[in-house]
Length: 111
Length: 113
Image (cartoon, rainbow over all chains, first blue to last red; front, side, top):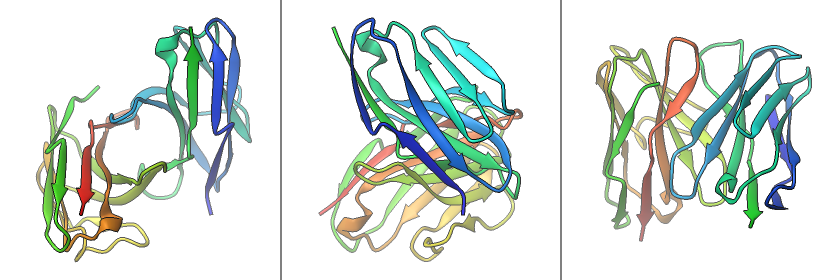
């Protein structure tokens, strides 16, 4: 069974304090790993797709990396507006483009 | 990326009634999905809705409880039937674009009393 585990469940940072979120996965055949941001009461907002080990993608203060077992979302010098829940999801080779989600990491950045 | 809207954005319903949620996309897409997000939980896929064929349901979800329509390539509906308080969730539709990236609508927050 495909599994996605995110850690930590919650993370509190001071503004400017860099850190990383982890997403480990156990799947039969990874087609892609996705990162989303979700604000309270809203749908997930697409951030990145990573397709193969060694791949990296960046967007503003966020950088996503991928290995054969896990992905990291690095947040550099975060600001309060980066506060949100960050979701990781995987798509596998079999069947449709369905996603299996982790439970998310709730990030709070204090000024 | 596709722009997705959902109606209603939220609703409070009585136990035993049904609610139909609409999902509209601003471009034609082949694959649409319906997810449920229960309070404090992550997203769980309910079904895949393809135009011109029956929806494909995930384990634990059945057509009698969650009937889905997909009349064209820009629109879909999900009905939550014979509701109970356990159906209180956020319901989200999503679409896949040509690069397999999946985009979500704003969600419908359902409360069943």
